Image 1 (cartoon, protein in one colour):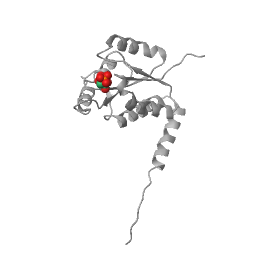
Image 2 (cartoon, helix red, strand yellow):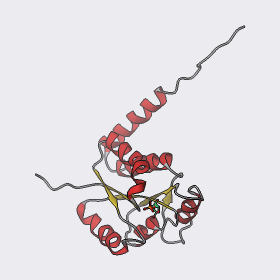
Image 3 (cartoon, rainbow, N blue to C red):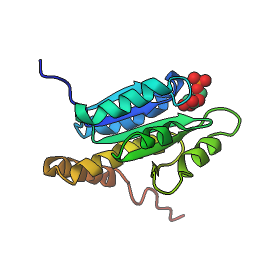
Image 4 (cartoon, rainbow, N blue to C red):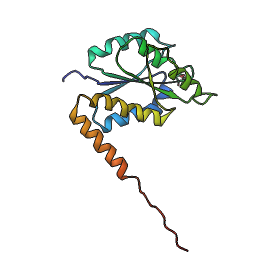
Length: 166
Ligand code: RP5
């Protein structure tokens, strides 16, 4: 069997992030983009995180999607070890409802960008979609699939749903 080559790496800080981050994976699956999902932590497994990120381009990875909650340093830590684009998803976890993760993810110092999406599931789906859009810049077939997905979304918006003439 040919070696698996993920184009997108979806990283998250904890197993407890997997359910929400599955929205990123689902978006990429809908667009037929090969990806892999990795649980690794900026704080609990910093060496494993750095090793994974450094090896990823050699395995075919072109974009990172990174979700974390609380003191969400994972996206920034990934960005510190790569020049590939990093999309960060702040996750709701604990007392501050994701505001902590949003600020930690979005407030990167100049020079090491993390493109930060919305808190939670919408952010995770959009990160998956945005990763696909980046790849679609050099993949016309994927660009076509993306346009068709967008058309299906638009077609599902019902327009007038009620008219009342009492
Ligand atoms: C972060 O802390 C993780 O990304 C997760 O969102 C949060 C809580 O992790 P657990 O205590 O559930 O492992 O590092």
